[in-house]
Image (cartoon, rainbow, N blue to C red):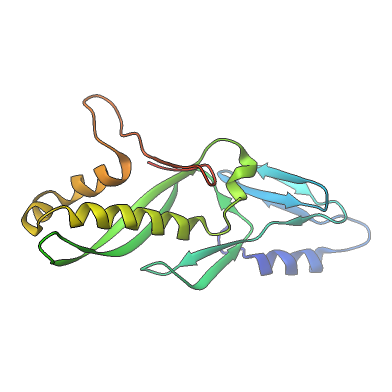
Length: 183
């Protein structure tokens, strides 16, 4: 459903716009869309089919793409994957002894809390990669190359997700801006 971009939704609505029926949108399981009108906003979470009223439209997200992530080419879509989303990135790190390291990372993302908050950030991928990259670069700068090489996974996980306590899962990283949670 990521392939169903905002432009495709608009073309579908135009092609499907017949006087005898209203346009509808199918939201699959694990996804959500924000239906907007002049005086209201409504999050529709799948699995559901929503018939759009006159004057309603779908909010468009513009997500950073590529590896490493960049805003040069954005994916325009109306669908937000709210559960079990995976975002990958490549980041350049530098250790305390000035050695450059390139790390490929994958983040697991879900959205929690008030559904209307999920759509407050148009590019949650860019927000995630910028913030997480900053945390990971700081962790690498505080570590020598030998120590980083010996335990890089644990160093990066701890920097992003918090300390691992015996018998408990890591706390994860929550984003107040839009209810995004990295786990």
